[in-house]
Image 1 (cartoon, protein in one colour):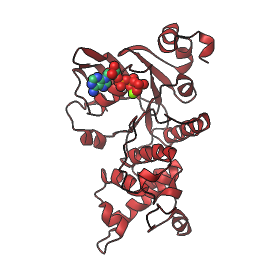
Image 2: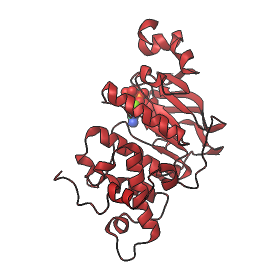
Image 3: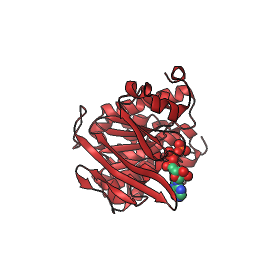
Image 4: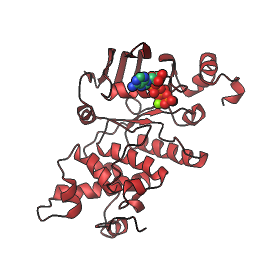
Length: 295
Ligand SMILES: Nc1ncnc2c1ncn2[C@@H]1O[C@H](COP(=O)(O)OP(=O)(O)OP(=O)(O)O)[C@@H](O)[C@H]1O
Ligand SMILES: [Mg+2]
């Protein structure tokens, strides 16, 4: 506990003050809630990424429908992270495009893509290690609301209502992902699983339309993975659209509405989980194992 920064606000105090920690109201009160799977929110069209002679992504197209959890799976090196990187502006596509609500994202800087509503987490956790969990989330909120982290956390005399509510919104998000008890720990001192959850909270703080998670359960034991999948389901039920990269096919089966399968940069399947599970192409390409080992 010695690693905790001295708290200026805590969950219990917030609760005693009658602060409602429901994430949807606190974080994004004006957000449109997608309650059922709807039209194509994201369209990935003929996306190709080449690294020198290597085609990491080869003419890949798929839609992400409003309100769904779409799984993006495939063996190591299949191009999953490359696809995320192309969607979020880390890599410039060699050809093809990505549309969000019908508008092209090509050529936009990463932060502009975030502002347009596409947020992500990283396969290798990227947090501000010298900032607390709460500060990491408030930074995410900052992307949307003009709030200074210092002002919000130090409660300067110029502290505004907006700044105060950024802290409240940040706490609500930490509560939502289940790590509010560590709000004032430096993020580098958080247990690994908490860091993964914090990345999700930070991405949610940008009030995204689509939340892209790159192997969020990597390094988790089976019980932790189940808990995380439950959280992802809750996030979707809260009105977000989710793109979930997961290496473990069994894991995505239970949580996704639809699954896109990549192999060697190409899309080899795009269907409901139960169809994917029985697809011989997927079984041989992805697992190289008989069907019995899949379910
Ligand atoms: N910046 C890069 N420069 C060169 N090659 C790259 C780069 N990024 C990825 N690659 C290559 O592109 C291919 C796809 O990699 P990618 O990381 O997208 O796979 P992945 O499906 O996310 O795999 P994993 O399950 O291991 O995370 C691999 O052959 C990888 O080595
Ligand atoms: Mg990857």
